[in-house]
Length: 377
Image (cartoon, rainbow, N blue to C red):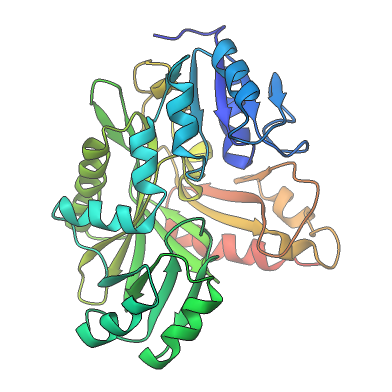
């Protein structure tokens, strides 16, 4: 076990890294962040901040020299960086797990190899693949063309109404490898955040129901108001993914549930997840404390949920006409506000979130949305 007093490394200085740093500090650890942004939210509160690119050799040597273990807050850290760090210290999760999940082509093939269902998809690596995909009719239109790498929160993807629009969409995305994915008629979207130890024990948090706007998570409700059998299937699928990746840490699996009730794996996030933020205020142990515990080889913290929760994201759009109107939100005694310390508000940028807690999620949902509506200046 890596005990309190040790220094933990964090690759990435965003809000997930900031919340990890806060949890680590509460347990008595020091945190060293590597992020090229001098104003990164995590770097501003960490014990040290290496302002350098993720492939900077001197910075990586310093991180490996000071830290007992290094983890990550986002999936686009180069896998080669994790491999290099592993020569100097523990790295959790390991490079192979991150490499699989940071590319949609590899990720979808991995999911299918486990016998889990996904939305129908076709791989588009070259312009020649466009005609082949249309002829094969593996994907019905409308569909989404998604970059295989470096896409998140709705970025790096385009809606394609018919096969005739495919070539133009591929050019607009830069003619890089892509996945063409059939649009699913959704009944709901779910996610499972699961923790896994180095010796393979797993503990999932309660299943979460999610709603998106413009490809960005807007709201999460926990526990998800779905049939127990569907929730159990989602938990088992998430654990199967974590086990097959030999994952150590905390990860999330996102699911589509189509209008026929089928559970389809959408994406795997090899890190803590936006849809697990409600655990900060409604669980005995948050996903961030659990991440600290897993990478340090500590026992699980309890995943028990003591309150129902509705979490709503606060995007930079709310700041476009001035500071959001906080009084009503802050006057609600059962609502917790979390702001991430970002200096600049931009449309679509996650600036914070709030979580309403209470005995049942049904009444909380209307209250949370009403509070959100009153925030706009």
